Every structure is written in C-alpha cells, then in structure tokens.
Image (cartoon, rainbow, N blue to C red; front, side):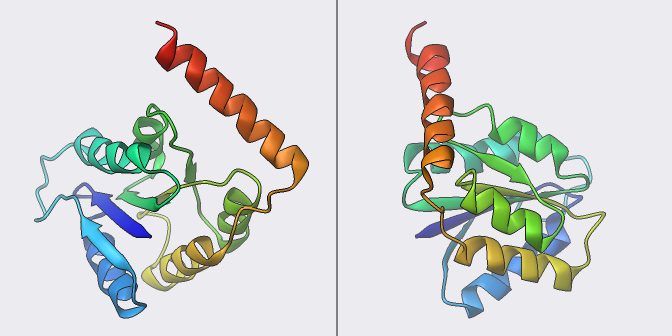
Length: 154
C-alpha cells in the first residue's frame, strides 16, 4: 500500500513529523507537498494532488492530509470519485471511519491535535480494516452509485 501525504502551511510541520514516523513503521510514503513551509500556499492544491492519486487506485493507496482545521482538505478530497475522506480528531473516530466507511483519506486538523495524538490516530487508522459488514457494504455501494450518477452520466 502506498500512502500519499499532503499539507499546506498550517499542517506542514506535522506532515513532516508523520512522514518520518510512517517511514520508520515501514510504509511506502510519497509526499505530494507542500515540500517547504510556504505561508501563502493554498490547501486545495495539495488535497487535489493526494485525492487524484487515491482516486486512481483506491484499493491500494491511502492519503493523509494536514491543514489547520482539516475541514478544507476534507472538502476538496471528497470531490473526487472513489475517495472517502474522513476528518478525524480522535482514535475512536479513526477506527470507525475505517470499519464503517472504509475511509481511504484521513484529514487531520493540525491546530487541534498534538503530534503524539496524530501518531496514534494515523497508526490505528492504517491498521484498522473495513469491517465488510453487510450494512456498511450496502452503504458504500450507495455512495458508489451516487458517484456513477454524478461523474459518469454527464
């Protein structure tokens, strides 16, 4: 599995920490930017890069996005087909977003979480599989049907 990272200036520092942490855990990580701390950068640019990668190969990749609130990154990522981004602020939500929604992009609110909390969230999120329960699978099929309608019928 390949993990794609993206952050604007508000999440840059935390992205750099998590990048090293994930590499230490043995994950294949690609940093899609920003590659330097740039106060005038814009979160949609980096969310788009990550979401495009995950959208093309949702079964074999995951994305992790960092910005101040996490909300902007999450909104952009969820515009892409096959992307299910979750704005996560604790371990319980990280687990649920994987077990129930099979989230493949994690949006981190860097202003609200310290580095150790983010490490725990990222680790549990990556280690938690989709439950495959019928009700959750049915709901994902409905999401897929909406995507088909929106992206393929027009």
